Length: 255
Ligand code: UD1
Ligand code: MG
Image (cartoon, rainbow, N blue to C red):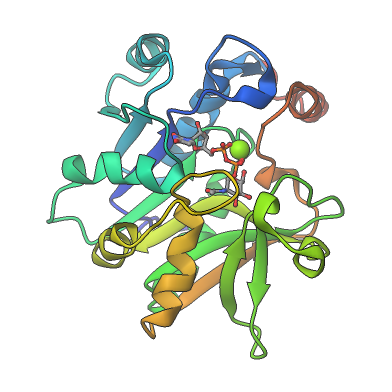
């Protein structure tokens, strides 16, 4: 499988506190299968062929930087001083990205089962569709906690609504946002510029870029991972961390 369509550059979000973990450790430093969550993500992105990675750090950043220096010294560091949301976090990395980069991947540091195959498939979809942005989605039995994917009458992604902001009909949607994206850099920069924080969490949501890009007449594509795959699992709670631990030991991947 060629790796030519993967973006040259990716941003990995690792600045959040992880309040729902109820632990003093920054969320991405929790371990599953003997490795930190962020280490799993970085490993998959590198194996997929992404040559340049920028990690956004913030909450207890000295600890996160120490982990990166120990296992991924080639990863560049961007600092998000205040954790104002995922859109704001990506914005903190943009000055480092530079204008020579045309396509950027954006990934969460809390999805340890993200696979090389999915990163490549997402990238192929993005190029194949000539999209301004392409996101990874999955249809799951229990969508709770995730952003929901709202599609229009033609089946195209229209917007993403976060659980905290969703109405009853939106909450019924079982197609979720996995938190992995490919963006054209110019479309990303422009759409981050219009984000507002007037939502239930008072944050600048990266997910709001989708509706904006659509409103500009641009294509937002989606790659739907196979039904109920664990690869999209985002770790927000200790229960989810334990779930990943079990899945990894079943696969015999525990080191
Ligand atoms: C996010 C998505 C949601 C998606 C889910 C997938 C948004 C608004 N929501 O929700 O649609 O279904 O991921 O797992 O993007 N982070 C920062 N700085 C911040 C905030 C977060 O770096 O200011 C980092 C966190 O460390 C984490 C990642 O971004 O690695 C995602 O943040 P998190 O708070 O877990 O978002 P979710 O609520 O899971
Ligand atoms: Mg999360």
